Structure formats: C-alpha cells, structure tokens
Amino acid sequence: MKQLNALAIAAVAAILVVTVGSGCSPQVKIDIGRLLVAHQDAWWMDWSFDDTTLYWKAPNETNQYTLHAVDVRTGAVHSVIDGHDDAESPTLVAGDSMLFFMADRTDAGRRLFQAPLADGRAGTAVPIATNVWKYVVSLDGTRVAVVEAQTGELSTIDIATGTRQTFGPGE
Image (tube, rainbow, N blue to C red; front, side, top):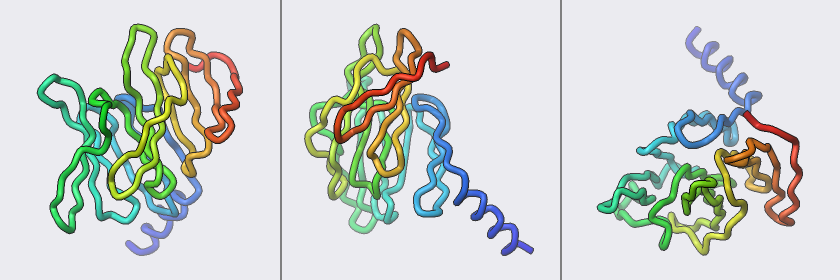
C-alpha cells in the first residue's frame, strides 16, 4: 500500500508544476519528476540537481544576504555571487546551469538578475527587469514572469530575446 501511495504522489507531482511567488512564499518545483519544496525566506536553501551542492542564503556582517554553497563531498564552502551581497529570492533552474535572484532594493522594488552557474559559482549577473516585486522562472530558464512592484502589472519576459508581454494587474 505504501508503494501505491508513493506512486500516486509521484504521478500527481509529475503532472503538477506550481511555483508560488518569491520572497517569503513557499516554492514548489518539479524537476524531472523530483518534488522539491524550498521556503524562500531569510534562510533560503536548495540542493543542486545532482544533490552534491547545498546552496543557502544567510545574513552577513552588514545585515545583507550572501549566497553560499558547500560541496557536500569535500566540505568546501564558498560565496556564490561576487558583488551582490544583497541577493534575495534566489532560484536555480535548468539543471543548476542558471541562477536568478533579486538585488539592488529601492523604494520602487528590486532588480531581477540572471547569471550562468557552474561548479556552484555564478558568472556575470545580467539585469533582466527592474522594479520587481515577485518573479517566477520557467524550469528550463527560458522565460520569467514578473509582477511590477508599484503597479502590480504581470509580464512575461523571454530571456533570449528580452521580449516582454504584459497581461495586466497581478495581485
């Protein structure tokens, strides 16, 4: 019976693809049938796709958040992103080859960045959108949906072309 229940849960998980916001909202990701629940708050954590690297976010000495990674095979710990100690709401996608995060907080919202990720280290971060309140990235990393901080407008952005399509108010 336990195996049948596990199969039923796996079947539902394989069909269900839900990502709810960022910031302090729970996030559910389906990645090749694997159900992963990560609570994106001040102490966000996520495993690499191959379960060899643990990523987490913690406050540093200036009370901004730094992204860290540890290779669980060797115990080696390092910072993931250089130059963005205020990184918030990180999201790993495309088999851990891309990292999305928000930074540069202003009264109008935050900027959304995308950076390539290799060996637990992010490459040069590229801004994708400004004045972002919430965002969600497609599992393959080709599209992102953003809610604008002041107007609540919901838009999608094609990462390759930068094409933006606006649908109207978000929440």
